Length: 243
Length: 81
Picture (tube, rainbow over the protein chains, first blue to last red):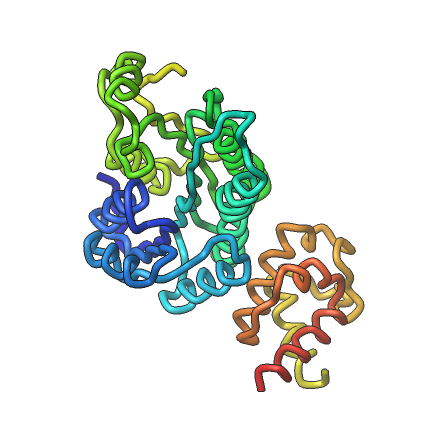
């Protein structure tokens, strides 16, 4: 595994699933990790579970709160080297059943929340002119998915946050990449029927659903020096799944 | 303003890597190549660190000159006092 000793990392949405696995993977590689979640107690428990230095409450839709937290982490630890903008929500709705509220909550969390995090991270990293940011896109953001129009649109936006921010921040030594997970065994996909699971596995050349650790390891690679010439990429972590 | 300006001038020089010939006190956003949108982010971060203040997004966008920056820092410091 890459050596992240001495690195300071922040993982938003780190209390479960891919975020929790990522916090654990970064901590295992030697990074000092701060994770966030909407509920403070849950964030603290997750931090203890992941071997993170701290678990803090954060609502990523609140730009001011994100800015304050990111700045606080950088100030307390003397730097901020790695940010994983993982916080997000997924709610399915067929096209004719999409409520305005779903559009607003999905876009404010997944798109605006990611944007706030990347903005704050870039500001914190700018002075040292080095840093690595990873955002969480999705395979459905790349290919679309029936019943997930809003979520897919939000994740397509997230992928393009990575592509665009990478172009702006590259000359400041800050890399920005995205991962696009396929169907991963998390709380978000726990409600899938056995038939749906079997169908997805059948469409996946590697013959299984993904695990949070599969995504976490890819993120760990992208934020490490082993990916020092990689930026603006959207890396599929999907077992070859074809939607 | 008298207290803020000299220190802020040093921050501008360091963050934007300004040479001796630059008229910092009359500098405006995009007057020079170094103060573009990316340089602006580095500048804002440096000012926040040096003066222990925090700008909101509107203030970041509105910080269009050295003089405006002096006023903003002065105002934020008076609020924090």
